[in-house]
Length: 239
Image 1 (cartoon, rainbow, N blue to C red):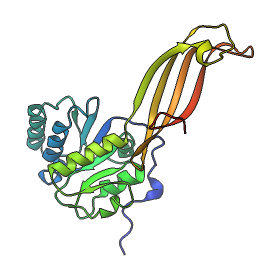
Image 2 (image 1 turned 180 degrees about the vertical axis):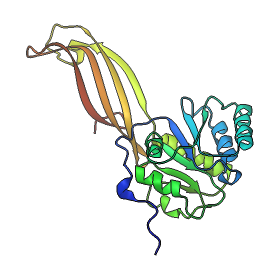
Image 3 (image 1 turned 90 degrees about the vertical axis):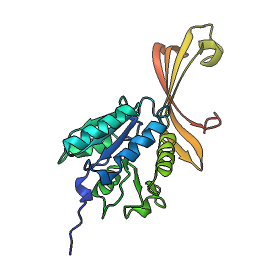
């Protein structure tokens, strides 16, 4: 009997799924892992990945690391890609927690322990049919794709789209929107944050948090900041 190699009760689940704009490759730095393919995909999505970081974390031969760094520079994505030394023990959970998605475009894996660990932490995974993780697709916890540039680009684009965020700045007068009975015409400056978004039936549902300053509320509350919570659908109407 082989013991379960992933002890779920000892792996901390992430506490927030707020977008970090971080992609993670966490494995051995080796040609069989498909890192050049990942760099090609990131290069194709350079504009869509503006503001993102691809963290490539793991042990590898210095010569091969240098080759990959040179490749990233030649493709014009050195500002996106960050090569980091290996992480071991409990420190690795933080890596998974800080990633929006973990990407392993490998040519072949018997199991893929990092896939199980990432899922246990609550971080979805993009990996290839070179792994035995075909359940990623029907379980809606990642992307199990054919090995190749086009499928990887499409999966990354879909992952970015599903994790989209938004911030909107607006302004209006107090007696125009807050209390139409008031003579107060102070300008209300509003910042609308969409820190958490969900794609359901190919439609966006966004958690929206709004900050308003300055605000004078009726009923002698006085001048103070207020915070409101709404849920908005893709068509702009409150749900």
